[in-house]
Amino acid sequence: MAKYFLSLWAILSALIAFELYRLHRNPEHSMLFYLQTRHLLKAKFDLSPDPGRTLSLWFGYVGFGLMLLTNLYIIRKRLNFFRQLGVLKNWLDFHIFCGLMGPTLILFHCDFKVRGLVAISFWSMIVSLSSGIVGRYVYTQISKLKGDFVREAEAYNRRISALIEHKELEISEEELAHYRTQALEAAGGRQVSNNPMMALTSSLIGDVKMRLLSTLAPAAMGPAGELFFREYAVNMRKANTVDSFNRLMGYWHTFHTPFAVFMYLAAVLHIAAEFWLGAA
Image (cartoon, rainbow, N blue to C red; front, side, top):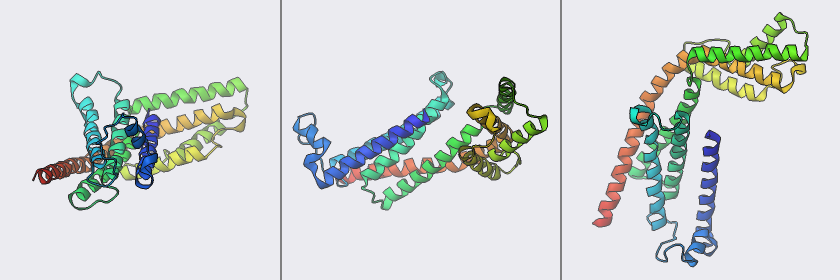
């Protein structure tokens, strides 16, 4: 689901950017102009992409609306009435999509020129977005209880043993222990640290290694062996670092929330000022 939302954000951003490029260079070749000529868009709708014009304002409205929608995840998580609606992980992925798409539209709204009150709101939004991406990673490290991670690691350990028996490989206990230790070390879970930042750093480096290394299992075990050793090591690492990541999540909330609140306050003041000046 996360990859789907990231792909959707990338595609929408690219399409909007291309449309704005057309409107700047050759408006008659743009999709909006085509819709207008087919009377699918009101003739009085201003297609100018310049800041302060109709199209730019709509980018701002929709962008701010998407930023407001990020709060649905918080409502889903906090209120008992909504806890039966969907899977929390999917709500988090939608939360991140809105947190990506909203700032993107705000950038288009201000034509990549951030000044004054808009700049305060925008940079608060960027800090909130960046910390949100980190928060998503932290969440994946504590998505289960410590015992659940251990049980999952043991399940993969049994699958490793079953694969060895199935392929009738002659591997001693010492060799098997060596491969397990090697995989756990590559995943960043061998050295357990009570320092949350050290745990975060080792986990990030471990995830990179997990993607790059391809020698975690005996070659005779094939791709299945590689997968089982990887999953064993990652789950053991999460079990070893879950306490540190729980502490880190607490620090993250302390950092993330004030920037999010300040972003909304600055945005509301900006919108109110624009309406007041427009009506004056």
